[in-house]
Image 1 (cartoon, rainbow, N blue to C red):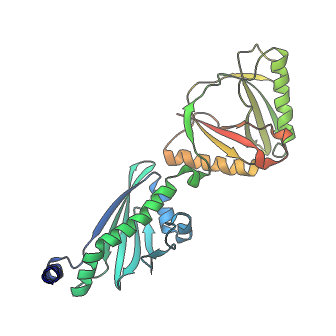
Image 2 (image 1 turned 180 degrees about the vertical axis):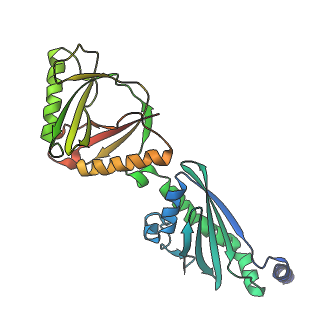
Image 3 (image 1 turned 90 degrees about the vertical axis):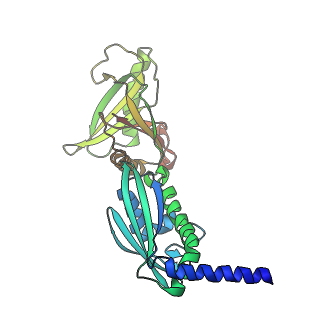
Length: 304
């Protein structure tokens, strides 16, 4: 009985001290590192339609401790959210700072929207750890999702070095996007040439298609060892060995074109520049495989 009385006295004294000394607008502070740009971080934080993609699976999106969480304002370098806890309105101020071009420091400050007194102040004091832990779950989930390249771009990018030093290539122009058969014919021409001079193909065929003056310029290249001067219609190119990005994509032309757009965004996000054109390395002989969902392509992007 004496022990219980002692505990009650401690609780009462603590509550009294909190009611008197604890700030009227206390501020809880948390910090997170997100491995992507501040613009992307703000997009996924401010657009509540995207919350279902990254929200912690244990709780419904747009809810914080069973109360609605809403975005009030969002514009770099800050977002403001609002919720309630035990009938106390809370404001979440989120500040975003670029640590590097592709790394964001996210600082979260949680504070009551108005001064709190008496019992409200005591409640906030007793539950501030719970508030911080639950908020940390949300922002940890956000950082984990948008820091994952597969989620953001649809593929994982690897950095490496160019290994193919010599290419034989040919170029054709088409009125429409080249078909798999068009590509196959160009590849076959190059393979027949290499075979005729006893040279070996050292890697998968390379493809680059661009639109020029209303037509589609289709350039095919085959990596090989050193070869003599080729006949008309076939070129030799000596590659400058340098850094390159590579990403493996599965799917047809639509998937690949979207992936290349994401690839361009990846370069912007990472602050990289390219000294040469990107290209597709065709692991699958597309002219032999009619099911485009089975096409496997490695996208290469030379970088400086």
